[in-house]
Length: 131
Image: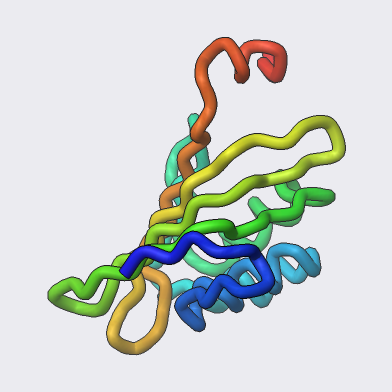
């Protein structure tokens, strides 16, 4: 099922919804506890961050001041749970960019993997090179 609705009317998977709510509150410890002990976050252009403590520390350092807005959601059943793909935008203090999150969520409602992809052209990203 694909949903493309206004953000107010968008129905997200409950685990993904808690991810976005806590992320936007800056409560990165609450985001991290959504992950299984071996769960990992794959941010753009970086190595995977593994385990809730490392994920919380990473988000506290890298995501401060960011807001994530879900605009479209698709959920598909998998062998051990479900895969939830969410498209939306991330707003930072300096810029906004279209983003896709892919959540692998277990039957126990824990995130096993979240992959974050920027949906921007190289030309759009070049001005934001961090060196």
